[in-house]
Length: 254
Length: 168
Picture (tube, rainbow over the protein chains, first blue to last red):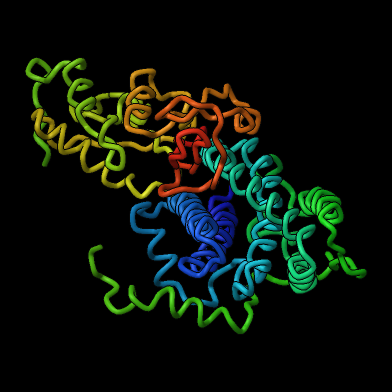
């Protein structure tokens, strides 16, 4: 018997990751180093936010909520402490190397997770995962190219990428933690996060090494993943800004 | 309460498809929602028409406009109270775009998505002919473009930039 509430909690956490990463990427609009990347990051942001909406809608179906209104309520009216995104995605956007590397690290993990989810025994979940997975091919193609280009580019681009990796790596361990609700789901509904983490770690380790980037010794400790209930000090400001317009008039029709 | 028409006076299925074929894509008005493969199925539920659509890209901002325009076209046929259902099973693919729509995209200066038969990464390695001069000497400028479904190229022969509808 499928625990609908557990699966909804899982999907809301996935949606929160996509939403917050999309929001951080949207901050590059008008600020990226070149026009092409301005357009690219705006599109990455739009895609991730679009994907979050698909997951929120699916969660709404499982909870018997109105799928037309549920996503906006989750995004614009939920208190910051109820968000379940990774700290990895909420960190301030940093320099462009930081945002690009974060997107790459997230995209690889997402490809592994979407591959698992598109085999889910829960048909509605598998369908949405399949939709998102093909779109994400374009993200990964883009971020892989840039990680290589910047890692092997100039002394400065390599230095900035290495600094980004050093800063991001401790947060990447959050990827391997079980998602909310995951433990309560029967086998075959969602892939095991710890197994995805192993596949992710193998792939990114090899790829980053080829891009001239070094993972600092002291691999992330999977035994103590950062809880998705804990947020960094910058998160409250992000939520306050994101929700500021909606909170002026929560009943407004858009 | 929604008043449904008796079956005898309902428009025929062909008439409904014809009306839907007049609904332009909000961002590419030179093609319609049927030939783009977005409108998938018609069905009746308790006297109400149900139109199943499969949105293209998840974040397509035109998606809500499409639903409103479909309902408006049906209302004009006397089918008030129709319903638009959204299905991702199977997910939309650019393989569903008809040959006529591909030609219209090209005529509008937008390179149609190459047929990929599931091998998206493979087909992205192939040259993309310029929709203006036909040259295969073109360069990818950006995998992302002015909408989620486009990428930007430049033609090395006629020197014009152009967009391609992304294969999906």
